Image (tube, rainbow over all chains, first blue to last red; front, side):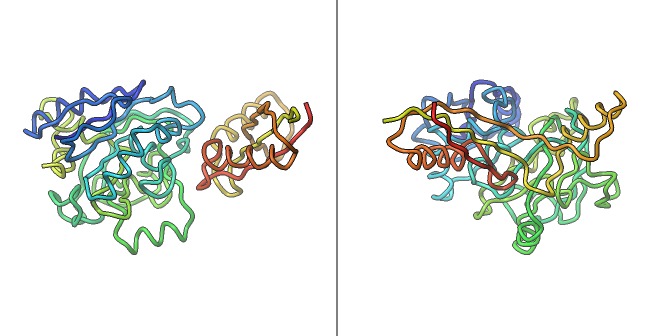
Length: 223
Length: 83
């Protein structure tokens, strides 16, 4: 059973449920204060504005008791995926490196972007080829990935950069770097490949009639 | 026990882009102010009771470490005043 953790202010929890249902992946929405169910086999931290983005996006949720459970589960190899606000929570909680902060534009950005798959050997990217270009929506004001240059080099060396913002031909350019992220990074992995976060929304790209289906492969990491 | 106010200032590390500060700077320039650079910071004023100034500083520092600042992007400073 995949637990979709709902905080006060989550707003992509139902989209995520709809997407996982479509993929035939058993799931349930779990209110954070109730803790993780016993039969949890995977965890998704969905998008939204938990705790009103107070202090910093994800800062409050990252320090809530359920995230201790998430950390313990992740340490045991349970797959964990953070999307958008869930990605911010993941970095704030130290499940993944770096931080997501204010877009270089200082604006909320809601648009479709292209991503290049950088490492196709993780559960979240195995459905794609390395170098493949996919299209997913973004919707965030604080999605600029920040990490020092040594940290970024280390992530690259360890194959933990999963996705980079690119143009439609897969070129990783400054113009395609919608939010000004370090190294155009859109998604990164934790110390275990079973843990990953990304700012774009795979759950909004599962139904062919709305938004395309390029996000299916990421959520298939739970299958 | 004595009453203190801990002032915790959290700011972006040097070199980390601050788009809100940039936007604020441009707005000031539109108002025809002359300025070279503008940096923004968050300031938290925390009233607390502690046995000593050192104890108050330790507690406020732990607050900064554990929640108020994100070490990836922030530096912070703690100042203790008697209240």
